[in-house]
Amino acid sequence: MNRLRRWMSAAVACLALSVALSAQAPPAAPPDIDAWVARAMKTFDVPGIGLAIVKDGKVVLAKGYGVRRIGAPDPVDGKTLFGIASNTKVFTAAALGLLVEDGKIQWDAPVVRYLPAFQMWDPWVTRELTVRDLLVHRAGLGLGAGDLLWWPPSTYNRAEIAHRLRFIKPATSFRSAYAYDNVLYLVAGQLIEAVSGQSWEAFVTERLLKKAGMTGSNVLHSAASAGGNVAATHAKIDGAVKPIAPFVSDNTNPAGGINSNAEDMAKWMNVLLEGGRRADGTALVSERTLREITSIVTPLAPAGNLPPELAPQRHYFSGYALGLNVRDYRGTRMWTHTGGLPGYVSRVMLLPEAKLGVTVLTNQESGAAFDAIAYRIVDHYLGAPSHDWIEAYREASARRDMQMAEADKKAAAARDAASKPSLALERYAATYEDAWYGDIGITMEQGRLVMRFSRTPSLVGDLEHWQHDTFVVRWRDRELRADAFVTFALNPDGSIDQAKMRAVSPTTDFSFDFQDLLLRPKR
Image (tube, rainbow, N blue to C red):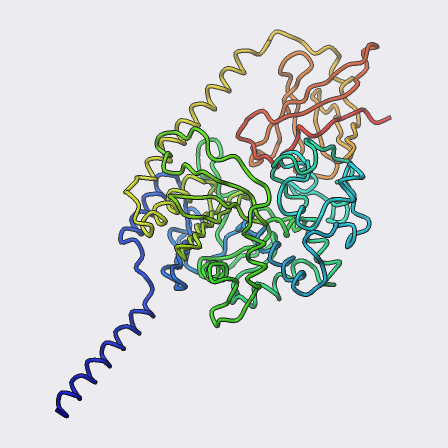
């Protein structure tokens, strides 16, 4: 009998140990993940990737692939920093949430309560725009409106950029439509500073990054050029991937300034998936704050007619919360966001019901790469049918490239190349003024017209005649990839009344919001 008891006790102890070890072991990563990432990198010409997967509160994987810089041997590892760009926005939302928890602000209080000098174009909108409205892209601004105040890097400071918002005309009525913006996140950063007495950078570092254990991360765009274990930025220029200069202006850190790595992003994803709690069980943000951050405020139309190769992405609800998109995927809820800067793009996917998180960081501008990897991982844990996302995105990308080439060909064919400008070239030379941007000069230099944005050093370009009174400004910095049409309108007496601009290519980054400029000769 004693022998039986001893045997049973030993069996129970072994079972308990087995259960304990099982509970501690993280779920397995997709068995082919390394090969899948390598194939995606080769297909989409990505030099390096940082990848993090968390599941059920455990870190499944946090590692690097490839190299930091083309032509150099330094490998990407789990600590290699990438600019996460607009994946910073949820950190700004969480920072505001902490100030709500501290009793210093309210989500639905007007911004002017905390920033009395803040103004939008419409006085009524100025009075009504709330702290929450700063984060949800429904203030009436157009897509990327005002981004030229900081992108490419300008000599304006944050206070000047925030001041100039009052001169930007709305594109829609207040709270009636979604249009992604960055400048109101800059205002959110100004609000954090005004209320807390700390800069956005100091507040986010001390109250979020350090407390989440994200000790390898930082909050400065400019840190991308600091050297060390940092991924170099790359882009496809004239058909070939090559290193490009990183974006280093710190004006809009609240909208996209964080640099992070796979290991730290795993910690952050677990905070969000564990109800705002850190690994030790203490709260970084409250569950109430997390609900605010992840609840849809601005509804979006569900996906329309997707190409057949991307059909599994069809979803039935979608909206923007506070720094996150919220939608369904294969019948479960997803919180997600992307980030994009010159040479860095990234994707974060969080499925709260599955307690699953995926972050893909890249040092090349290929959204196809990060999505092909992220969807493969999510499908694995959801037990979804097999789908070749790499081939799907290769086909979708090839089709898009072909459509862009056809559009360029069509535009060139419609051009009246035999037409001449209405005026002698020197008569287009003048200082022009836009109400919200400021001065833009056009000068005659060695028989050619040259455009210079007074507050943006890299926006210097040569004007080539396109047709009639439309020219194309070709920026001397070819890494910008943002050539633009400049069209002049004349007064009855033949003098120039105004000029408008728009990007030549539909692939130009939306932050080059040339279309929002209305240039008038400065009197």
